[in-house]
Amino acid sequence: MNNVHCKKDTSLTKEEKDVFTGHLKIEGLSHNIWDLFEEWVEISTSKVKFFYLKVYQENELIGLGLFLKIKPLDLTTSYSRLRKNALVKKIISFISLLNSNCVYISFRNLITSNLTRPFFYREPEMENIIMKAILTYLKDEKEADMVTIVDTSRNDNHYQKAGFDKYPSSSEAYFDATKYADISEYLNKHKSLKKNLKRKKDIVTTEILQGPISKNKQIQIKECLYCSIKESRVNTPSQQFFEDNIFETEVYNSDKYIHIFICIDNRIIGFHTFIVSGSNMGGVLGGFNRDYSRKSFAYERVIVASLDYAIKNKIKNVQYSLVDNYTKLRLVESLEPCGLYFYSRSPMNRSVFKHTLKYSDVHELYLLEKHGLLKKLH
Image 1 (cartoon, rainbow, N blue to C red):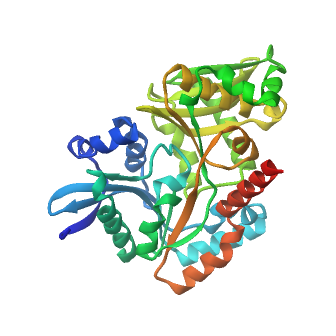
Image 2 (tube, rainbow, N blue to C red):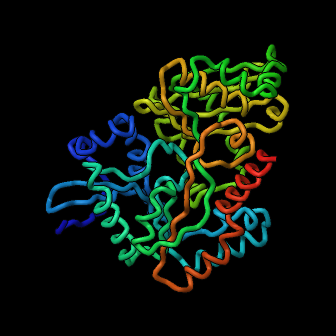
Image 3 (cartoon, rainbow, N blue to C red):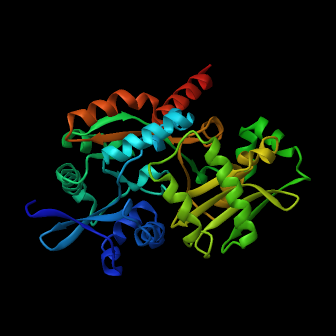
């Protein structure tokens, strides 16, 4: 089709959202899918800026992409080996500041609230022209030194045609809750998990709440979150922005989200926050206080509680984002293969990305999944 073009924007009207009602219906989503991204757009800064990439045919909106711009890109945020050495981290951060590279990344790269691909179509048959328009725009955007998109591997053809390079990524993990009439059916398939959950059952409690969350609980959540960040295998390029602002959004200050708390003596030792959109439930944020949760199976309890909640509330899928630990790989039963798609006009950037990716967080998660699946086979 002719006259298809893109435009960046920082607002999305109700009328524009309504254009994608059919898309949401096909994906089993409701209109609250926009809420979190909309909040990020509003609190964007000059260094971390969220935006909509709108696709028009003539003057009619036909497609949409969710992206953010990060400038300068601090390389240490995505490379755990660099983060672990204070001196190296300081040097690389300084070099990143000097280079001042600008990167555009898809919302899915943030590993949060991954209920859907970050692309929306007015009509399903428009997917090809919309994706071509979006990827062409990103390639031609002079401001963007690099573009990275995490997407499901079944969409390889879009990126291949556009000239993006594909690199390995771990899969997205999810539950198909429709497989179970009751949580006992799942636990009967995981005998060791069932046994472990019986330990300390009189001491460890599970609480499921719909917000808003009290300030006292928010303080405990932050302790769990910061402990997990310190031990995490993966950070995102906007990690600090996310940490600084998540508690200023409506995530913990409204009734829009579901929160699962694992507690000992009324103290939160682990949590996971979810958004329910249509027939889907997706993880937004989680954290665990390792000083208390190591022998309490807090993470396993969250997984079981989320599936139990989904079964009881007739929710179809529970999305757990990218595989980033062996427990998730072992217990969250379905995997959606993903790829990391990269483009840069600069030969130097392409070379640096290619030769350093093996040290990155995303590649380490890919190796973790690969190793974990091999262990399952043996």
